[in-house]
Length: 594
Image (tube, rainbow, N blue to C red; front, top):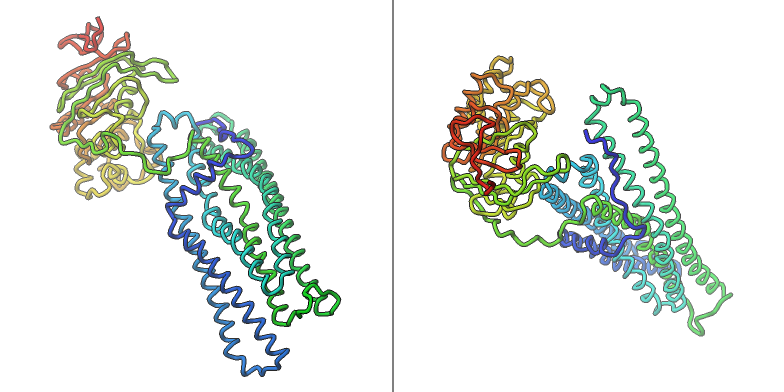
């Protein structure tokens, strides 16, 4: 269990513009859907003008011209049609925004997951897994409102109010000027409130990430906490983190309500100003039009359009906090991952097309491995394994055999040069490496499910017959056939219900389902009796025909069946064992050491 209360790295109180630039660049993934979501409010605005003019005309004809209601039925039906079209456009725009947001979130999650895979387990061990999961799930989800609602609302708010105000000037200059002056004040005060909302959103998302990380880690280590009597203390800590999250949430809501209040104040002020001007003009108490009169149709049109001028700004205000949430989420992701995933696909590495046809040679030169736990494991070591060669790696416990296996599988960092099949390890793309290199650690991960489903992870498309054959080769049937449900017997998370040796054989059966060129095994026969060990090794050697095999082991019986034996010595070098000598006997240097 990771017991670190990890909190995402803090970001400045006011984020830099590169976060918004990154969000805009990420929007290219859903640019077609976003384009529709942006275009719909603009089309709806045009229909709004037509609707207001049509309604004002109908009322003018009914009140001033005394036109019969029956005569205006076609006009009323046309007005109803405009309302229906606007409703349909609103649905289309909302659906397009949601579609764009889902596509963009999926692309970002894939990029973040790929970033995790590139960094490898060594990097992830130093961080709370709950926090990383929160970044990929919760923080990316916080970007939904920005793409689905804020971006279309921002474009509409920047274009429609000004267009409406300018469009009303030929009808009545005073109304147009009033709306043109009051409308820009709303974004100004919203921006002032937005700075506070952004800071509050950062603290809110930080508290959420901390709470998610704490809860996930404590839930995974619940058994350990109970055994050591620390469960109640951790309950208090989780409760405190939950209370902090609640306080941050309320702070964001307070600022959101303030922003809405600012909007409503100026919107009400503008609409009231237009209504007051129209009313006083009709009462002949105010005359700013000179000799021209304000007709009923023009006055009604101005009154109907005044609220519509502020409607895009109302929509923007309702979703303005989505922008602050998105910026805070991007800052949190950047702090947790040490950078944001590249927007443009990176240039394919030199070995991106790497593939293995049969066995591959392995070469390591000037290899140095440092670990935070035990400092230097290997220093300027050399390892040469020919294609199709079977190799045993010996050495006392803790000397670094498992670490070397992880380095060759690119699960740990290293210094020096490693080549597999003539291609640098760092240049091989992840998918190709995992397809052609199979690795089995000392503590393989088994998941909740049946024994068969755990084996089938090696090749999900494998048939039941192929799974059973792999289980037979790995001696899994020795214990599985004694169970009532055989390979269909369920096991718990981390292989609960199986012994260490049984779990090791289940994981080995996974490899037997695959077709790797290089097989890296770490103590595959640990916890096995002599007879079972011999059978498992025979199966491994049969499987390794035409493949390259490296086994880290303590068993001299296993090592004796390999083509070559290497040993990690006390000088932190890799040396070839001399045939016929014991484990502690002199070794033949292969890395230039005297």
